[in-house]
Amino acid sequence: MVDAECAQFQTALGERLGQFKLRLAEEKTRCLAFGRFARSNAQKQGQKPGEFTFLGFTHYCGKSKTGHFKVKRRTSRKKLGASLRAFRHWARGARHKQTKAEMLARAKARVQGHLNYYAITDNARSCSRYVYHATRILRQWLNRKSQRQAYNWDEYNHVLRAIHWPRVQIRIDLSPFRRAEAC
Image (cartoon, rainbow, N blue to C red; front, side, top):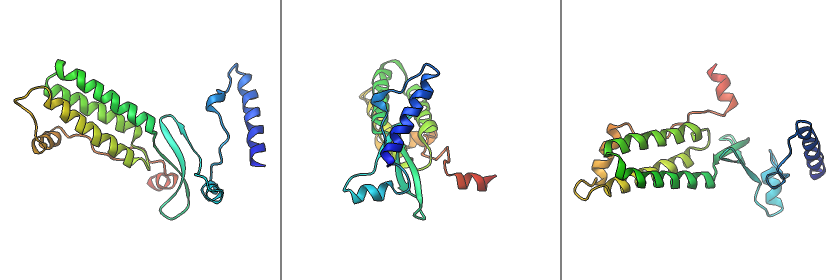
């Protein structure tokens, strides 16, 4: 019955979008069991619960601390890997063109920009993973700038504290109950 409702909705949505000369991308559109009972129903069938990726986040069924259903989000694996590859590519090229101070300032801005978008409720682990890897990549390429002035970990951490290296802090709270309490 759920599949029939999903197919009916998908057809109606396609017709509605057609009125505006738009169409659904069939390769990106699928029916997915998602909601309060999706996890338990999938486990009864011996399957994993469904999840989907949208706007760089993987959305999945989870539970709140009190055990109630909650839609959770994490950075999609594909976007996290692409972002770290882009950071590595930038650092590799920047070591020849920028001073260490310039590299640190620009790297800080890049990491801060990533956190400004991805640091949402339930995504702290992925953001921490990004900051951890970006910090290691930056140290690697800073140390390859010159053989004489390489940073050991103590010196490097001291420099990061001095420039106020970004820390993972949830910037967008998606919990509707906490937002209502704040008003």
